[in-house]
Image (cartoon, rainbow, N blue to C red; front, side, top):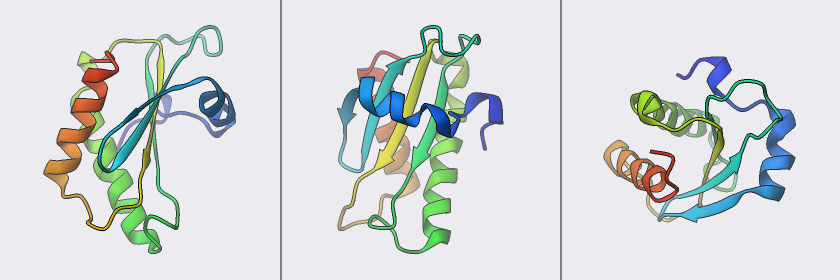
Length: 115
C-alpha cells in the first residue's frame, strides 16, 4: 500500500478529470495531470478507482486497488515528480491477473512519460 502522502486526496478528483490527459489500455484508463501549484510537494501522487459496475463485490474492488498500489510502489523511485496519476479500471469480460495488471500499469506510465 502506498503511504498517504503519495496518494491523491478526494478534493482533487474534479480538477484531475477536467484537466487530465487520458491513456488507455485493455483494463485501465490513466488520467495524467500536472500538479502545478496546487500542492507544495513536487512528488507524483497516485490513485486507483473501481466502480461497482466493474466489480460488484467490495472485496474484489479492494483486491485490485491493492494490487495496483503494489505495482506503483515498485516504480516510485523511477517516476518523475509533479503529476497526479489516476488509474480507473474498465469493465471487461475477463478479470486481469496480477501479471497483466503489472504490465499494463508499467506500459501506461511509460507511454505517458512519467517513468
